Length: 221
Image 1 (cartoon, rainbow, N blue to C red):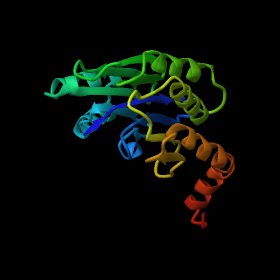
Image 2: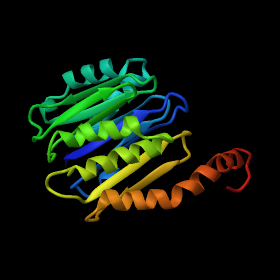
Image 3: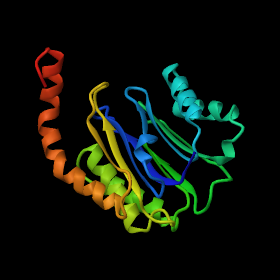
């Protein structure tokens, strides 16, 4: 399945939270990306997506490989690797990324300490570059910074075919959904996603930890 997308994935070393944000002309994007396994890593797959590649990379990380080693070794076994664009961040903040030659331009990825940003079929390279600037300069928690990055990319044009879907997801505790908002079909998907996030985030921040503790103690959440 072809998901032509721009995305950012990251880990917060202070809290252990992992997450990502992405947008695309492809509907239902949030069902596929980001792929998170808390305490191990987070992956964003784009281009012609190979779900088995995600599993292979994450399995290698679980067995002790770094993001770079896991992705490199997994790609050796993927005959369609030139169709892939894949980003990986492991729980230590190590990063890896690959943009295959057969992805449609404009295509590129950027790696930093604990984050990867990537895109293809973009209106220009400044989409990804502006995502990075916004993420690094934004204040607040991981979900706030991811949302700011996605908004910055959207303002620069994003996917050159148009706008339809967007997703923002951050995992904090395994088994307890934290930030998980998505828009599947909307002409201003990123802006609509931000509206949803801004409307509900305060309630989540205020009640999440108590909810988790109550459930663990057998009290109704």
